[in-house]
Image (cartoon, rainbow, N blue to C red):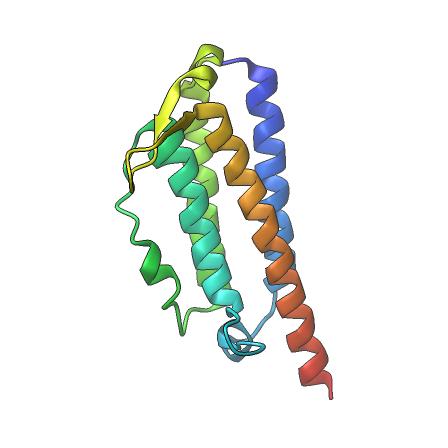
Length: 154
C-alpha cells in the first residue's frame, strides 16, 4: 500500500494509544473498575472494548483475519490493572504495525465483510471507523479518569 497512507494511519493509531496510556497511567485497580454512574462503563471496560474493537475493525473486517473476539466479554472486564490493560492495547498496536503494510492501495476500495451479519462495507470505511470509534472511547476514558481523580481528591 501507499507508504504515506500507512504512515499517516499508524501515526493516528499511535497517538490514540499514547493518549489512552496517559489517561490511565498510575490509576489504581479500584479506579480501573469504578463506574461513575448507572449504565456507565469503567475505564477497564472501555479499554477492553476499545482494544477489541480496534482489532475487530482492522483485522477481522479490513484484513479478513478473524480474532475470535467475544464482544460481550469486554463489558465484563474486572480486576485488571492499568498495566495489563496497556498490554492489551500494545498487542493491538503491534498487530496493526505488522498487518497493515500488507494492504495495497486498491484494497481500500474492496468490500470487507462484517463477521457478525455478513454485511459488506468498503475496507477504507472499516479502517476509518476503527480510529473514529477508538477516539470516541478515548474521550470516555479521559472523562472517567478525570472524574475518578476529582472524586478521590475530596
